[in-house]
Amino acid sequence: MSVEASQGRLQDRRPVSVIDIGSNSIRLVIYEGIARSPTILFNEKMLAGLGRGMVLTGELDPHGVSRAVEEFRRFRALSEQAGAQSLHVLATAAAREATNGPDFIRRAEDILGTEIQVLSGRQEAYYAALGIVSGFYKADGLVGDFGGGSLELVDLHGEAMEHGITLPLGGLRLQDIAKNSLDVAEEVIRDEIARADWLKLGEGRPFYCVGGTWRNLARLYMIQTGYPLEVMHHYALGQEEALPFLEQVMGSAPADIRGIKRVSKNRRALLPYGAAVLREIIHAANPSQIIFSATGVREGFLYSLLPEQAWDADPLISAAEELALLRSRSVTHARELAEWTGKALEALGFEETEDEARYRYAACLLADIGWRAHPDYRGTQSLNIIAHGSFSGIDHPGRAFIALSILFRHEGLYEEALSPKMRDLATPRYVERARLLGGLMRVAYLFSASMPGVIPLLKWEKRPDGSFALVIPPSHASLMGERPQGRLAQLAKVTGMNLALEVGK
Image 1: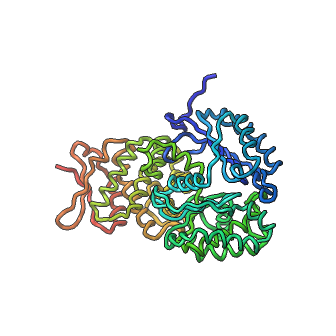
Image 2: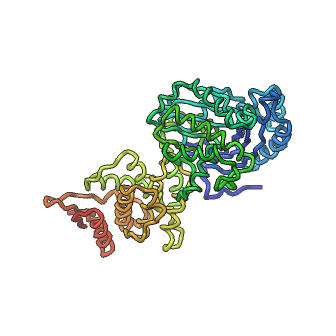
Image 3: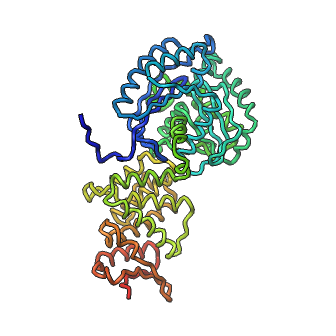
């Protein structure tokens, strides 16, 4: 049977599957392809609890093994159904340490039809850190991957890694070692964290949290505080927020924690241990922020498969380019708009930080993704796609800046157009920059009709009296009119400048 390729997919990608066999969970992720900013086609998890009871028996949990083996048949079938060109399987702490681990791996390999990579502690830490490299722009800080059987810690500077260590502080392991006593677990945690005396190098730098237990702690805090954006990646907390919450989780029965129903039952009992480990790390490292990551070992492994020339690509710009290619009327026009707005801000005297320039460029690439919606809802639809999209390399205020920019571009430069939730996330500077960028877009689109070729011809010129003229070439003088004049007048109010439209000589 022939399969017609959907236009909602990038045609140069070939799906690839990764199965991550952890001490607590096993997950299959099928990616659209190997890319700087990979998109997930399919994602399924099971909480097998392979490492449960291993401290006492030295073996993988037999019930967990039986369930995992049956699920592997489904995972292989799903991978084949999705058309994955390759299946990569990674196994971590429980499989490498259990006495019956080799037998389990052999059975799994027979079912999955591929070799399983049983990662050493050093390899697990390496891929976890690469996951942060994959998901963040110029990451610099400490990375911690808290799993069911172990905790990996790495000092990350860009793509350079130092002081990697694996500690026996996974959630299931702590539960077994302490025999469900959090007081006993805290002593174990303090002793083990003290072995990583280099954690003090993290003072004043971010600490990146990897792992499902820590992500669930973040989700609970979002619920309790009414945080306006339920996007986990790059959610950030300061110590003054995180520490009291971690103490609350450690001192409460899981059933008493607000929002606990949003956490799977198999993971709830591990939350106090995850909170205790994170608290001890904060005390030892004194980080500037605690940042939660949706990317980890799987994405780090996928990143390692990229051609070397793709490593330095900006993950945000890569993702925005792809979405523009899939949803905008012209990706070439989007790129022209990005270049032109940068030159416009420079000509008008507005300086940008590195992140502001990146976010502006991405906003221009995404400016037309809502064009198929009803005109009354293009702004709102675009805002929702951007606010909740699977973007990496961007923090939450940055998301708000881009979303607001596109909202202003569609709905006008009015306070009424401002989304209260996005305004709460964005800094005041980002709000004003979003209005400025939206104003520039509103002018440019009236000359270009969303098609390439015209925007690069529009030049800003400063006049002796300090005013600025947007000069249209004589060959395109017919594009002058009342609407562009009105849009430029709105932009003039935002900038506080005297702006005019002129036809060049």
